[in-house]
Length: 387
Image 1 (cartoon, one colour):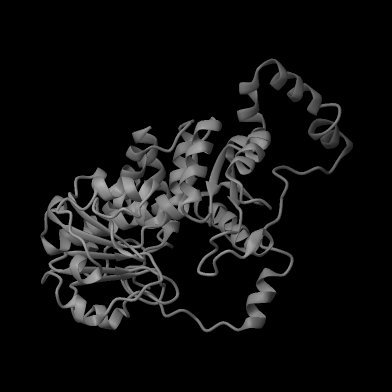
Image 2 (tube, one colour):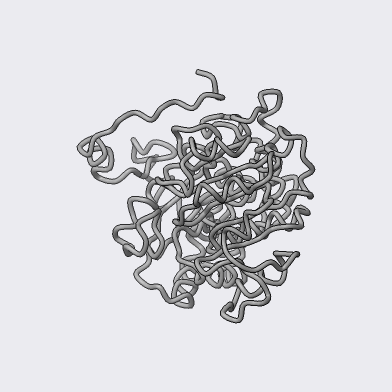
């Protein structure tokens, strides 16, 4: 099957879904057999004591002789799960199990889901600090904004290991890859694009940040009350910061003012966009309506006004899917022994994803398929090179 033509998703029943999740989606398997008394003496007592003594003498020995250095903890407090909102840690666990399964499937990394029954940032940090010898990296998942910004920053400071909130940075990496290739298709200069990001939460802020970092100067952010600008007195925290660093024309208003003449629309909110406003965008527009399952703009409607349309769905071309980014980013960081996931590493990952499209680049094929087996390897290599 051609990777340029996404397959229509199969119809699945509720019974099939629950059957697939029965007993959970993960299991621990032995790395080597334990079939004899000798095996037992090597793997457990008395043999294991030799390894423990060595680690006690030199903590660095833990990396090659335990699974921690290849184990990603997928951590959530259940406050912003998919499109379901604040559903709590127990209900979040199936999603975190799924994320751990994706780490194994696409990057060959061990992963364990941890759902925490607290929404207090300092308590989450304290918990993970106490557990830090059990894993080698932290993938934050489905933590509500603006707490997610504070939590990620504090964990990066407290833990000597890669930490990334995928809802922010995984999304931003794939969006950057898609915009980069979209600009190539349209013959546009990346830096000269006028971009509107609808949604100033976790994903929207991270997308704006990475676009500004690569030199796109005109990025306008919208929240539920309108355009982020320095004229607004209701903004605090990270929104207040982006009101200054983005929106170079310092325009005010709402979607109508933001979209007039815009080249790119990126939707990462639950809002909808009136069709009449799409007419005011540039002639070579790109529309990335990424909310799931219902995009901000129906793809067939977006196609009337945009040369390139992308969604977060698997049943349309140009699926913006985080699985293109996070498995390779974490594997590259762990393989390189990195202590941080930096902006340079994220940009390198985005360029690696974009470059994989190659000669097949077209308006309906600006990012590779999530099942393109080259992706994780290419992203991991790019991340390692950027460490």
